[in-house]
Length: 117
Length: 113
Image: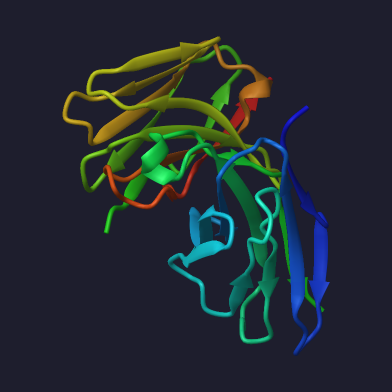
C-alpha cells in the first residue's frame, strides 16, 4: 500500500542537540511539506518542497532545516536554535507542483511527537 | 494573510444525533479541504470542495461550500462513536500560489454512546 511513513513516532531532544525527523513517501508525489501542530492550534507550515533539490521556507522556518535529495524523502532537522521544539510534527505530500498540478489533497503521515528532556 | 475560523471549538453529542461544524474564511476559498484527526495521529482526508455551491457526501458526512466561497460546513448525520475526533478545515491558495494549506484550529467532536 502506498503511503507516508514518519519515524520515529516519539523523539526526545536534549539541550543543544540537533535531531532529525524522517519522512518517506511511496506515492510518487512531487510536493512534500512539514507542519508543526501545537495543542489547540492549527497546523503551521515549516518548510515545503515542490521538486527534488529545491525547498522553500514556510511561516515558521527559524530553527529548522530540511533537504530534498530524493523524491521519496524529505527529512526535517530540528536544530538547537529552535528554543521551543516540543510539538507534534506532521509530514504531508501531494501530487503536482502546488497549483501547477491543480489543487490536490495532501496526504499525511502519522506524525512524530518531539519532547525536551 | 488568510485565516480560517472553525466553530464550535468543541462539541459533545449523543450517539444518533446530527451535528454541523463550520469553517469561515477571511478571504475567498480556492480549494477547501476537510480532514479528520484522531489524537496523536495524522490527518485523514475526507473531502475537497472547489466550486461555489458545491456539495459532496461520503457515507454519513456531507460537506458544502457556500456560493460566495467563504464558508464551508461539515454535517454528520446520525453520529456514531467512530465519528469522534478532531475535524480540521484547510484552504488552498489561488492559481500561482504555493501548494501548502492554511488550517483552522480544529473542532473536537465527542460522541456519547
